[in-house]
Length: 121
Image 1 (cartoon, helix red, strand yellow):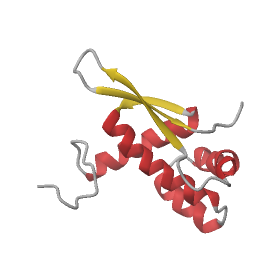
Image 2 (image 1 turned 120 degrees about the vertical axis):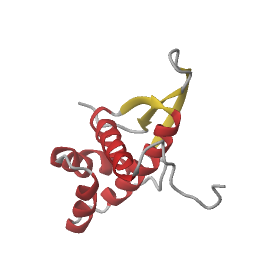
Image 3 (image 1 turned 180 degrees about the vertical axis):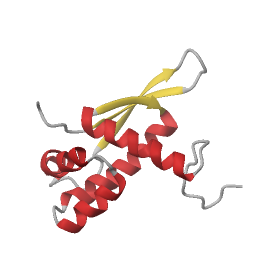
């Protein structure tokens, strides 16, 4: 039974799952939206929303905390300089998920995960 288990394992061990979430988060922050399976989108949503919440306080320690998870320094700076100021007045809910149906090959449910606001280029 999975009572009181908080982590969705996604069929991976801890290191592989963390690498997957990092890569998905970097892609989401870089492009504004990603297309993935529904369980991966839900797991990535909680991961990214925590990073954006930390990014709203722009101080040295916050940058260190986010840098621990996002390996790419450019994306970390982009999060603090461009994305987090868009959500200053918003208490949460920085992302949204659209369900797209089922994938033809394996029948997995596909979804689009996107940021509610994204900086104009």
